[in-house]
Length: 101
Image (tube, rainbow, N blue to C red; front, top):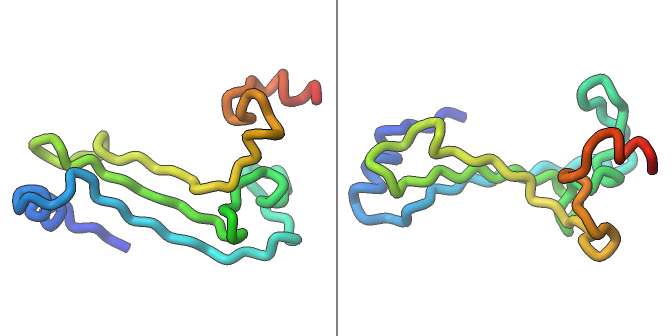
């Protein structure tokens, strides 16, 4: 998919929302093992799936500035993370601490 930045700038100039969001969701086999950085893993065990067991990626461009650039882009994974299970989110931990558990 290609996004025309000129169209995004036109939207911003016409007084539309200050954020432009594109989100895609993929149905994956939750029992299948996928390789990420040469390490086989199940996405459901990594808490990377949303509440409906989709892999969902959201891209948000901030259009509040004078131009939309690559610095305006933030990418998120929408996940059903079990905050009650972990005091400190796994993404915030150091790899050495994760290996201890």
